[in-house]
Length: 305
Image (tube, rainbow, N blue to C red; front, side, top):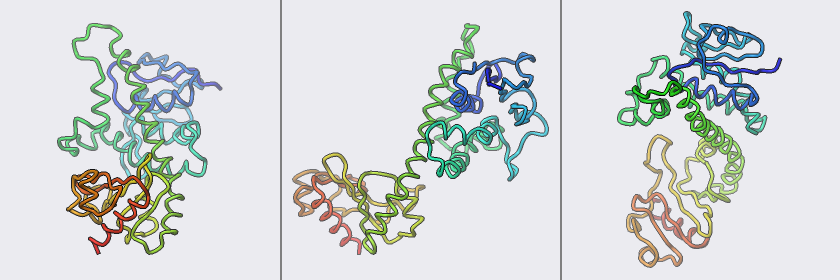
């Protein structure tokens, strides 16, 4: 039967039902998204998907609440929010609708669940304290989405619904961007793997363009590589490789004598014609040609080895 209504609760909103709405409205664009606690709307029926309300979780009946006892749990015992339930049931279809290649869907589904969905689930259920983010807690996605709710003394009788539907396209952009980035990393994987094989024992990795490369380096065990070069517009860049995604520390820094220099000053310091810029933190340099960037890379390697 055709889905005609997507139903979540009225009143204030949280990130989990907002993000669930992103997935469901993409899959069922002709369905009406309704916010209600009216019993007739939150009772399962074949033409409805009900989420974050209704007091039950039954995938076959298309109701996805998590507030009841016992609440639905993941295989490892961690709690679901409505977003986790919706993602588990509809995430793969959503990615197919977004154009993610079939061969990549399962891996991306798992990565997105781990990196994006699970934190929402944990925060919504109180299984994780916002304080774990320290001074950045006010910048977490649930907090930012929550800040879009109306102020307490907004007199409009439709304030909550108006705020929800205004927040929905913002939430959509975050989900689409995350899925797009994961899909891009999957596309880059084979390109980077070929470049690593071509480089062999060289500590300089040359890529045809800027792209995610960290996971391919880790998968290939290319721990010997120190720098990455690639074209950027009319220029070429030389980048250091971070020790991990959790730090700014690099496997090797660019020479201290280059730090913060541009144009003629950098050409004089490096001895390379066409050198244009080196960041003061020594993680990136720019040159006007491939030949110039290769010379800068070779000098940087000599300074390390």
